[in-house]
Length: 327
Image 1 (cartoon, helix red, strand yellow):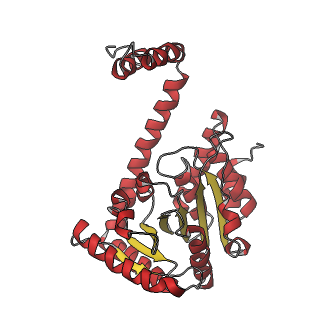
Image 2 (tube, rainbow, N blue to C red):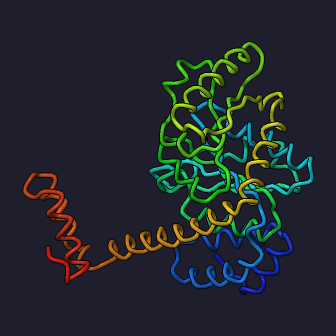
Image 3 (cartoon, rainbow, N blue to C red):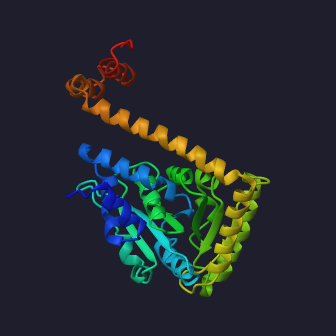
């Protein structure tokens, strides 16, 4: 990857140059040690120009139609004069490490809009269905003038609550007519969701979607008394319910901003981000440590064959990495 001067990244992103924005995102996503210092310089200089978007995370059960929903929502927002960035986190291939699904191809209308920018990224096995550098990509999109950032997660289970740690509003898409809806509730997700939207509320499925909405409202009233999320229905296919849904998102974010909750939430997210990066750095340093690298193969064999407990093996790894720690 050919690097550009920091000023070129800075000026190009601020000017909304999509080619430079793409290269800046590739820079912050790079694992090459030589790229890290330049990436952080660019991000630090752009930081004063960030924070002005509405950040919305979108998860959903398989088949709920996340990409179709985002395509419909994005078109609605563009029609209202917004500039929309979509960070679509795709599952990673365990063989190549690349993105499997390619969400951009499933947002056909939005991908053609000049006021929209879609960036697919492989999750690279990151817990929570969120790419490791999603936070930094989000900041770059804000600096480029996008005032709505939608983060679509992989959609693989309860670990997706991680996305709530980098957005202002967390929306979960559900599907009616696919069995007992209450059996499909992921408690971890719904404990942090700000909205549950039953998609595909159209045609013969509309009555089932309405029944599902009532069931979710009742269940969430018991699960989160006094703080239950908005529960609504919509049809991404027909475009119905999208405007009402977005109005609810804007109203909730505005209330949080007025009370100071939004500012506090973002501040805590920044601190959480710092510690996440510390942990990430420690994991990388641990695996690269020469004594640890020499020790691990035999320890793994001992654990597999029952000659050592996982705990004792872990303590030996940590002892090699941190000599003062008793093994």
